[in-house]
Length: 145
Image (cartoon, rainbow, N blue to C red; front, side, top):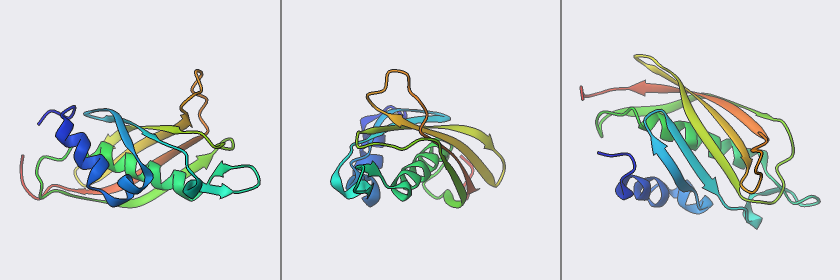
């Protein structure tokens, strides 16, 4: 199946409850890469004094992006993937605007998948990285593809 297929995007956006709740939109997806947009809204605020994103929400989006990138390597609906560890470094406050998060494959082993993720404000033409992360995932192929 072509990863650019509307069906794949719809599955990611509409059938994963947290993605639907956050309004996650897939902007680009291909083997080893995904870029998503998440709109800003009141439910994602962590600091009401400055209208900034909650770090836990950004971490959740990054974990999802890492999982989606890993999903570009799945060979069967029976394959499984689960987060082992995620680390996020917050480099600068993420103020109340839509964010873009992209993820790339760093390593795919026989049982472990590692992804790198970066986050910036959608409207920033310089794409200043506000947060970056690395996710480690247990990756199990149950059926040869």
